[in-house]
Image (cartoon, rainbow, N blue to C red; front, side, top):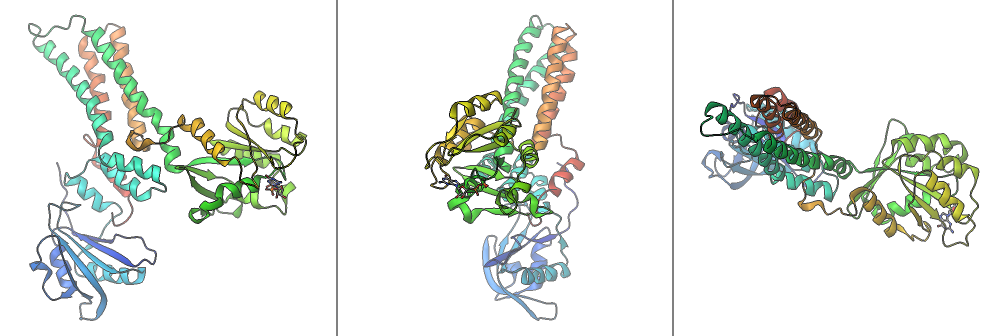
Length: 463
Ligand code: GDP
């Protein structure tokens, strides 16, 4: 594999918050030489064996003290990047870390581009493209399920599946080529039919992988959930129930205005991205803010709509108007305030909901926290056929992979067409090879340099 001429690179490898320790990492031919220049300890870094640590100080060129550190020396090729690598465990805090990094750059390293460490691991042949991308997903994972799928990919499950398909395609291509060259030993009689069924199976496999994309997105990014209903039915109580004990891990994602506040909550391994929670919380101006228009907008943006109705009150026009907007969406209707005596016309409600294509009704009391388990079960069955234990299942979470799978499928469909049209066999090979190549793009086998650059740029600095 082509390996570009390399500088020695350095970056802060840990997050920029104020944590206990922070790591500055150097990688490249001169990593040890540069680290030695900035470090004062009992012995020289140059004399340290691989995978050993030492205590000392990082100092300026004039000997001034910068930070007290532990240095870890790892010699290539058995390192993450496959190059010589030195890590300084410094005191956390971005000011100190930046000073240490600045000193290392002054001593001859170059600031790493985002993802450059991982790019080197890839160029050094230590990991393939799916694994490199998984590294990034692991870093960015916001919940256990996303982490599991990325770790699974990191362990090579996607590559294994893709390689299986590629092997099958290559075998058939090679068979056609051989038969054309050497018709005495290889016969293409009835081959079209056989290839046809092989291609059918390949398409099924590709389809199955593509089907996981949507779940992949929902797992990685969360299910965009809108809570809608007329004022006073209990929307903000439902929101509070869902956020409940999980409040600690709730993140506020401020949009450009407070109007687009989102909150994310992870329940039972499922991530709900609750949209427009500002609108729900803003009770001062209820009538104005939570009008049907706003509900309409939120419904449009949502993967899941939680329609809340007041079980202790009568069904009103405004309820019906909102129900009218639910068509074509995944909806769960929550009939709230079950702790109070009933008042709602259940039959009418269920008829109206049915007309809107929603047959999922749950009775809850947001105030008493009743019905949440049932709700989570219902969400699972609505989105993941009841099963969210994806630990060992292959799930496509990456847009680029999805794109390449659809290119693969198109090529395979063209092979089928050629068979049906009775085209000569060498026609099949053209499209078989383009399917082979598209699959190869997923694992980086036929990757162009510019594409590699594009992918690694998405990595965060220091990885
Ligand atoms: P929103 O306007 O739709 O957000 O409704 P709120 O969540 O602000 O609730 C309106 C009123 O209904 C408040 O006084 C809540 O305490 C009350 N409420 C909400 N859920 C329940 C419930 O399950 N039972 C009872 N008894 N009251 C509830």
